[in-house]
Every structure is written in C-alpha cells, then in structure tokens.
Image 1 (cartoon, helix red, strand yellow):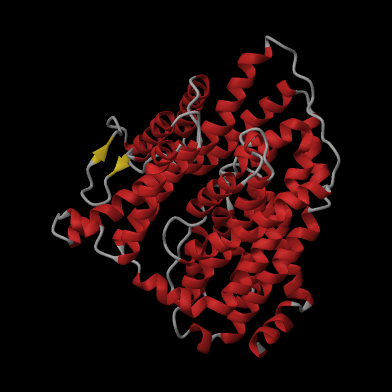
Image 2 (cartoon, rainbow, N blue to C red):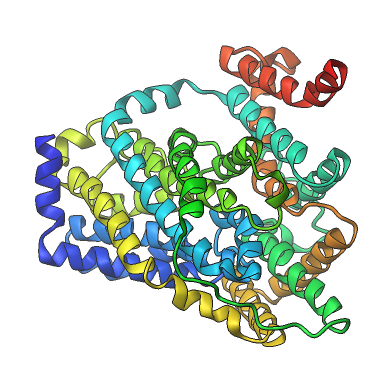
Length: 488
C-alpha cells in the first residue's frame, strides 16, 4: 500500500498529470479512426518519448491505451464502425441504440462502463497480480484451444435466428482467417498467388467491412423506398431505468475481462464476446436484444476496460505481452533498458507503481473528459443519412488504407462489405464471422501444438482438468435446447 501511495505521489505531479491527459486525449482521438487503434498510436509515439523519462512515457502510454479503447467504442456506437477489435461487440447493441435516438445514453453507458471496469481491473491488478501470473504460467495449448472453442460455440448458439445460420457465419469467418501463410509450414493458403495476401487479411479490415460497409450498403439499398430522416439525439443523460439495468453488467464485466486479459488467449476479444452472451442470457428484456439493449453495451465495455488492466499483469510480472499494445509497451521498456519480469517490482518499483497509479488516474480522466462529450458526439447522428453513410464509407476507406498502405486493402474492404450486405440479406449474424477471423488462426495454432505434444493423439486436447471442465460447459450449451425440449 505504501508503494502504491508513493506511485500516486509520482503520477500526480503536474508534468506526469499532463502526460496522462495528453495520452487520454490522443488515444480517444486516434481510437475514433477505424483501423488506427491504440497499438498503432503507441507505436507512432515511441520516437516522441525518446527525450522523456521512462515514468512519463509509460504514464502517457497507459492513457493512450484506455483512450484508444473508448475512442473505438465511440465510432462503434455512432457509426457501426469499430475502431478496434475490442469494440466490435459494442456495435451490436450500441448502434441500434443510436439509431433509436439513444446515442448519448449508449456513449454515457460506455464511458461509465470503462470507468468501472478500469477501476475494478486496476484494483485486481494490485491485489492479484502474483496469483494470476502463476495461473497463467500453468495454462497450456489444450486449455487455450478449449477456451476458444467455447467462445465459438457460445456466440454461434446465442446469435441469429437459428444455430445453422450462426455456424454458417462462423465458417465464413474461419475461411477468411485461413488466408495467408501457414505459420508452421510456410504454405500459402487461399492467397491465389498474391504476395500481398501472404500476411493474411487484417482483422480491422474485416470488421470495418462487415459492419460499416455492409451496413452502409444495406441502408443505401433501402433509401429509395423511403426517405430517411435524421436520427434524433435524445436526452443526454442516463435515466433511473438505464442505471437499474446497467449496474449489474458494469460489475459483472470486470470479473470476465480481467482473467482473460491476464492470459494469452486473444486479449479483449474473447471476454467481450462472452460478456455479451452472458448478459443476453441473464437479461429480462429478451425482445430488445438486437434492437438496442443497454446491457449489451454496459457489460462488454466494462469487460474490455478490465481486460486492458489484466494485460498488464503478465506483461509486468512475466514479460509476456498478451495484446498488440502490450507488445509495443514491451518494446518501449526495452528501449529504456528495462526488462519486465519477476524482478521488475524489485528493481524498478517506483516506475511500476507510478504506472499502476496512472491507470487509476487515466480511468478518472476518461470519465471526466468523455461523459460531458457524449451529447456532442451523438449530434453526428443529426446529419441526413445519405451524408452520414457517405462519411462512414470515407472514414472506413481511410482506416483500411492506414492499416497496410496498400490499394489491395481497399479492394478487400469493399469485397468484404459486399459479403456483409449479403449476410444481412439472408439473415446471417455478422458477429460469429468476425469472431472466426479473430480467433480462428490462434485456435488452429493451439490445436496443432497440443496434437504435436501428444504425438497426434486426440487425447492431447483433453489431458488437463481445465480443458475437461471447459468441454463440459460446451456440451451443456450444445445439448441445452434438446434437454429443455425433453423436460417440456
């Protein structure tokens, strides 16, 4: 506790507080641009920090991390264009809320969710870092594969009008995730001889294409039938009913997000998907899901923020980055001649505790700066819909081009956008496809590693207690409709 108080003393000096404010503002501004997420922001700012002391640099990076995640949620809610993969789930309920004139409430829910998730996540970081790090060390390839399979099954079973359509959407995403070089053999897969496709298709391009381009084409196809009116902004505060429905998801989110952030199993993507599924199962307002249920914004946003705190556990205590931002921050540590690991808390205790204290400060700054701005952001929806969606197409194109700087990325973006339009036309949910692209390659690698360890025996996938428990949960999810029918 004394070390944490000393960390606050360092982080609250005027110059370090200024770095935190700059980090949050830059992160939010950059997170709003699709394709330029917090990882790219930290990477771009690395040269700027050469002249700063290490403590100031990492305080700024922490602000960029949280600000970038919230910025991605802003475009996800208002424009159906996720700024990064952690904001993909927010679009499912956040954008329908915005279209119903509740954009300001959705943004306020996201801001408070980020504050609650970040606060609880950072407290857990202080209390549980050694324990979670020891658990993460013991988790192997079979366990990671089981976790990812659970995410696939849970999401495809809950979304869409039928499980068949959910699994069809998942297969589309898994097929897109196969594009590129096989990491183990170096074989080209679905590249059609193009060297530019050898690195695969970036997840952000897929998410922006399916969500933003697909939605824009779908709206454009229906504009001729009826003239679209500007979307109302609505009242810029949360009512008593909104708070009553949001406080439990805000508290449940960190319990899902923090453990997943601390283990290398896909960063904030898996826990946000699982949070969405959990809130949908527990909700008493089943008819609102897919049309703007506020729980579908509150839970995933708190989860994503807590997951960001969780990633710091394994990065600081093991030197093991579990997300792209953590990997860039690891490079930054090495730039200053510091090696994260078990001895970091002893050798650089002042730096570490100042960084943790700045995470508390960053969550407060994020709420203070962005909660009053929610109605201002929501006024974007007053634009007539043809102009609004033209702007979405423009920013989606800029974001996709920024990912790799290749014209081919724009072609892929609009091809995937057409695919998203067709999926809407035939009633296929978009989320399982995005999940397949994000987690498919990782799941394949973990499965192959587990099989290699066991000499190709399938028993290698179920040789741990953890994996057996997860497969038991999967069996319950798959058999539940049948059991419910038999009980009836």
